[in-house]
Length: 190
Image (cartoon, rainbow, N blue to C red):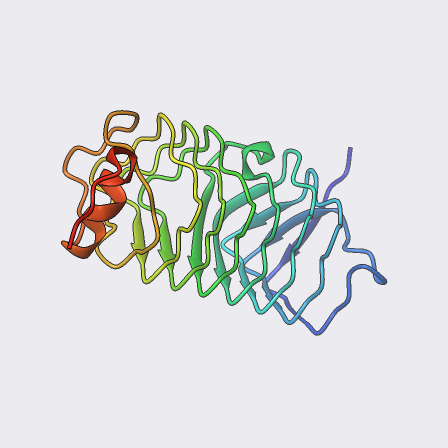
């Protein structure tokens, strides 16, 4: 079956809810100010692409490929990243909203979350080894049997991580963030 291949293109100010995104492989493309809300991006591959100021709220990601994709100032609400294709999956988030998204069992080693809002994001059984959460809000985020070894939470805030339920060896935390590791003990830290 023939698959479209789109390379080195800049897509700007496109409402894909009205203008269908062509199914295929997008390589080294930039999507700026585009609307993808509720679309089915299944089986579409994005390789070394940049998405900036795009709204991908509630898109379907069954077997979608994200290989070295950078999201900048994007709205990514309610996405199920565990449905994506595993092959070379690599993403980077800068100033994004990922509320209610899920990375269940997703390998995210060395992933960068910078200035992100990650309210109630599910990281259950994910591998976040070496990842960074610079100035990111993790209020209500779920960490359960999650690999957090060498992850950097020094600038993250509002997280609650149970050291007994997660692997945190050599993870980095600030003094202020230690409360997020002790919350289950219901102790008061002043």
